[in-house]
Structures are given as C-alpha cells and as structure tokens.
View 1 (cartoon, rainbow, N blue to C red):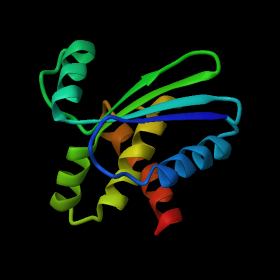
View 2: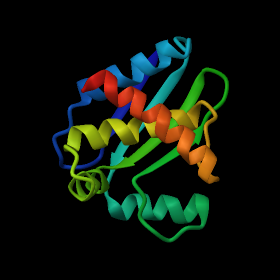
View 3: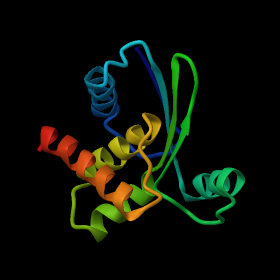
View 4: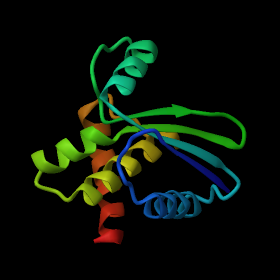
Length: 134
C-alpha cells in the first residue's frame, strides 16, 4: 500500500496521523494493494479545482477523485476550511481533519452523499472512525 501526501500549505499538519488513518482505513476494507494520494491546499486552489471539475465556483473542504486499477484515487483537502469548520462545529482541528479525511476516503470506496439518506450513512460511517481516535 502506498500513501502519498503533498502538503502545499504553510501549515504544520500531523502527516503521520493522516498516513496512519489512511492505512488503517485501507486495511479495514481489505484494500492493502491500493494507492492513495492526498494533497492539502488552500481556498484558492480548491476553489479552482472545484470550478474545473464540478463547475462549482466555490470553496469546499474536500474533493475526492476515484482512480482505477491499483490507484484508489486522490483526495484534496482545504486545510484552512478544516480550521474554520473546527471552530464552527466546536471540534478540535485534529477531530475535523479526521472527519473530513475519512469522508474523502469513503467517497473513494463508493459512498456518495448526493441524497439525505446517503449523506446520513456517510456521516454514520465517519463518526465510527472518529470514535477509534477519541
């Protein structure tokens, strides 16, 4: 299993924790032979990517792009959004980061949140992962 992380921000992010969560997630899904790429970016970059690929001219916290074969996909996280949302939801930055990271990973394995029911299931799955770290 290969996990590539690219921190394009000036923020100090616990990349060891991030890698650990990704590896545990992949093992739990028996996806040990898969590769995942993760990039941390800022508002400007994620807004541009969101506009290009989803035609949404707005900032978002996470984008997931499903890969093929051994490449499970790529997750792009806006770290400044993580910090804002942590404050907004009265979470620690670490807790919000784990929540959003697992949310992105769930998208890579086929979960969607287009409907209320799907979003509810994703939130339930994500909260289970949070409990492992808190």
